[in-house]
Length: 90
Image (cartoon, rainbow, N blue to C red; front, side):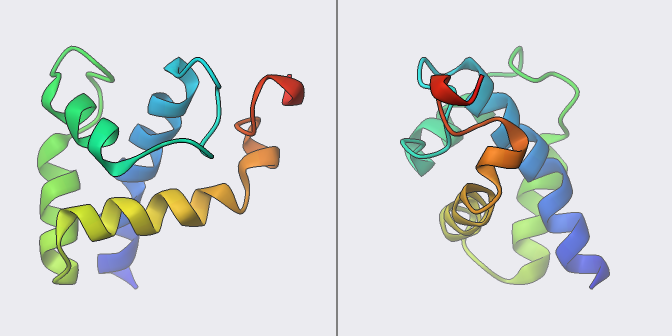
């Protein structure tokens, strides 16, 4: 359980930040490729530990792309509660 929480904590915060700067303000159209591009931008969501994101996936023994995709899909299930299901949710 501790590994799973460690692996998802920073990443989920990062995904929310990614969604908030998207024109759609939604997780529905978010792709792994765009998240990985934002991860490389050290100025974006500066408070998120990239090392924790990478190490979390490694500790779970899953490829980073798969971990990101899994977390995006999980957050989509609660997107309305997070206000991340598009402009109509505002």
